[in-house]
Image 1: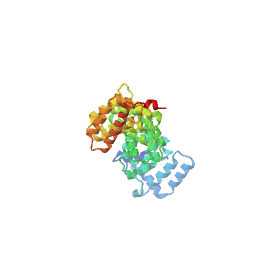
Image 2: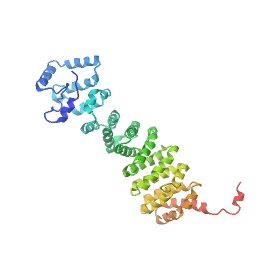
Image 3: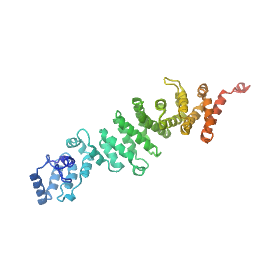
Image 4: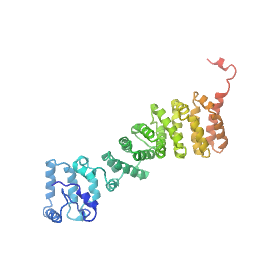
Amino acid sequence: MIPDCSAVDAECAGPGAGRAGIPAPFGHHPQSTEAMYLRKSLRQSPGSLETVLKTMEEKQIPDAETFGNLLPGMLQIDPSDRITIKDVVHITFLSGSFKSSCISLTLYRETVPASITDMLLEGNVASILEVMQNFSGWPEVQFRAMKRLLKMPADQLGLPWRPELVEVVVTTMQLHDRVLDIQLCACSLLLHLLGQGIIVNKAPLEKVPDLISQVLATYPADGEMAEASCGVFWLLSLLGCIKEQQFEQVVALLLQSIRLCQNRVLLVNNAYRGLASLVEVSELAAFKVVVQEEGGSGLSLIKETYQLHKDDPEVVENVGMLLVHLASYEEILPELVSSSMKALVQEIKERFTSSLELVSYAEKVLLRLEAATSPSPPGREAAQP
């Protein structure tokens, strides 16, 4: 007789289905007489179970190893010695071979009950990662697992981050790319992880820009998704995890997010930080900001942002940082001049005299703009080689 998963069913069904720790270990729920004979048999021949388990292993019965781990603890004579339902769930679900068997499919059928998932996720980070890897195809498990990780304090997550943690999150995003809740939760978790600034292995992060770009392209008007995505883009740019061929697309998405969600201050700050970081290292990214497109240029967007948030020093500081990096490129200066950015920068300098950072940004940009508009001294051109 091969045990099935009725132990969990009995425990979860409530009164009358079975007492905690006293599972129904056979292919059906034993009646009181059968249960009595089972207990009597175990008392009289304690070694009989071991013999049965050995025979199962010799005959290569599917999942014999799992049953060998379960049954001795489930069928202890003294109820206080029996393993708990939580132990049964852990042993059953986290057995590599057991997952693929027909018995396992019977246990979780189409979805894994929330109560079972919560039991599985009560462990540490390593245990949660194991659950996520074993149930990669179950969106409800992935979602609850990431929510659990988001609630864990940093000291429990541990530093530096386990490489497989990022890998599992990225894999989850790939497998469930059409589930917005999972994408949002994954981005929030990545933002949490990347924000600590301690990443040993950056390789798993190389897939993230394309994944987030796909999500933002699919859900452009979702404010929460855009906010988390802009934060991840910014931190990825600082880590050097956005490749040059991805710059134009990422810049376009950051500008789009600002344009659609100007009222979300955190999004605006992170998006301008991300833009500044990319423009600092790439003239191509700078051109993408200033080029005139269907939605307008990034320079007109900067003016809109300033007018909307000109009383917020942090937003103005991030705008100023972007302007400094834009002004560092000779080819971009004419665009800044023609867009009348000088007046805006002058206003920033005059309004934020108490901010040394903002005054410094404004002065750097003004010097560059003045140099670009000043006529060349007589004879300078002739002196050029």
